[in-house]
Image 1: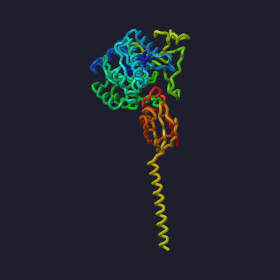
Image 2: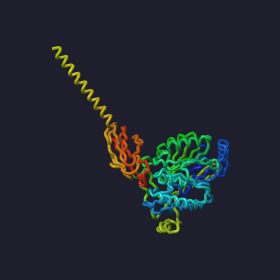
Image 3: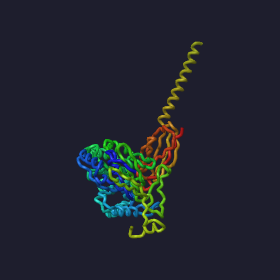
Image 4: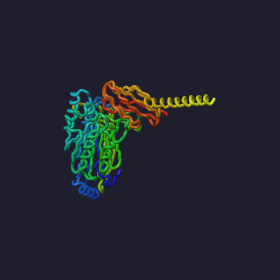
Length: 326
Length: 124
């Protein structure tokens, strides 16, 4: 699939992806032709010219979860870390879109899971890792333990001309952002021009994807209304344990696959049940989306299902379970 | 003769007024007291799992939680409530459109929260 570059599709370029999770290239490389012109134009508009970089989105590791359906624990998460470390060029950022851990009412056990999550994350050779909580991290205690480990649950930062906004739509226990955070968001965005590239990352979808499965944010429309004047908005989220793309207004929404198990297509089944574990293909439904800038401002976008040869076949699960790790 | 007829007329008119007032009163009483449907929320189920309501008929869903805080959400039926542990919350609605509605707990209540739901069927 080829896509022409234009101002509207700027963050589609940013939304190019790969991996267990998703790898995003923030800008087309090399900076030439129409893409270069666009970057210079955006630089003039926004005060800072965005420069090429890549980042990865990971989601839903659920550290501490013990199947069914997935008996592999953290193995897929650890494999994702390996893959990121094996990329030809290290990404600048990893954005983790929630459910880092699986919930438990025993605070000590939950803290242990957060420590384990941090330990696995620390193996990643990347510039920095940024997080938002999922309901399994923060839903039971209003995010208290999460904040002890990961500091604030919503914030923003700038990186190479792109404005990143972390939104928390889980800590109020209900699927909502809430009026306080909405007010903060308006204030946070006020200094940016309408053409500024903005990446929002959060846990739940900010639109009604499947409310009956709690795949929505009740005040998601309010969030998107605040973002509506901005022309280059990308929203990254997790929660649904499957790949999904959605376009509405100026915003492109992308969901990353999970690192524990996958949910089926809600249009094809009635009940929200995880896909069964396939011992011959233990990482099934953890996919790769490859994007290459092919020159002259075109992109090739390719979906590839992740099949790791070294873990397939009848000995696949035994190989994965063999300690120590992968 | 005329007096008797007048008296008859007055009595009949009075009766009609009384009946009309009675009917209006009943309707008012009906409007003030919608049918009550009791629903119990407990990790990770609602009991009963399904209720049937009538389109256009006001109903109070009386939600009781036996353990922790639960949510009760179905946007199309304008249901968006919450019930705290051990307490009861009334949610009054008038279903406008017949259909089958999956209503969920939208207050995170634990590991299997994602599958805590019940069905509200609205019939003509």
